[in-house]
Length: 425
Image (cartoon, rainbow, N blue to C red; front, side, top):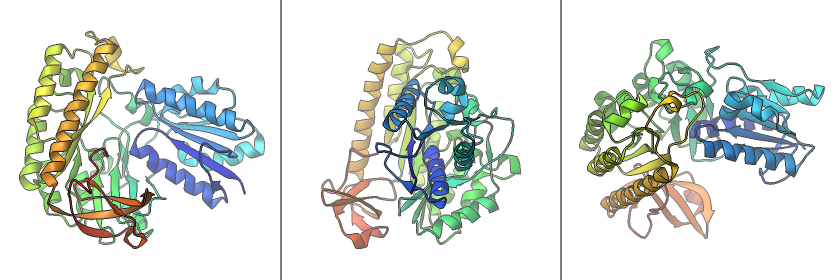
């Protein structure tokens, strides 16, 4: 039996797409093996959001080539899309696919096996509007479901529109049908993912709000989470609906990126700190126990000491639960490269430590606010030292003694310091 190993870097969207590739190989009779081991086909699904992500991509490629020089090595995704020429110079890489073609990977592997000719297919992003919905499998409890791809925003720091193309999606009806297929696998929770999820349906004259209302009617799905949504696309009407919905959980991931209006303007973001704060306070007014996470980029051009202090003060003032902190990394093709006011790398790192400290304190406060309260936990199958784990509706990770009968079931649990895992996000 032929063996395939897949290594995924980057966002939840990539994990969804990798799972779809794995299914295609399994249907062709492949055995899925660990990426660290020996395989006949290695797949590296890449990320290009930071220079560190790209370095990890190169490391994974070299690992595959060195582990089994006779294997087929396929590099796909965002790094392939924007750096195909660089990857083609790495000895041992046989297949390079951009984002428009990586869903056809298994076919390209077969073509390479027949012809022995390298398969390098990187179509220019924006040359088509094809959308392929994908969803993850393998975790019996949760599935990451790609409902949207691409972005039309072109923020000054971001290379993703060049790697992923323009915003696109399927229709509401088509997306709901895929959700039913996911539910048929026994999954209890679906996480809606996308590059700019809130722009779902744009080219069809539909909206993300229409989608979540229809998904809420799919009774086979017990729980939904929204992986990320821009604050300017999250309306009060949508928040009110989620608060009273059957299956959407009180858990939000709302990118902030900068905590000062001056830096937000330099980034070409489409909101102000005032709008961001209003969204959070609206959520908390109707869902007091909601978990709200935020992405923040530290050290972007123009972030002076004064602007960074404004950001810290702002973040401390809003009801955020924790942060995902990213140190700014210059990306090719972005407008930020020509901007003035660059922040020294050592200063970026120091500011990152400050924001991580704020995040830790915010998360501890959020957890303590929930101690002694009852929540519904979906138990997962992972076992570590005799313990099993799960998440409450508002994304608090808890543990209990392993019981196989609890896997993929929802149980009422009182959150306490003894069973809550503060270090997990």
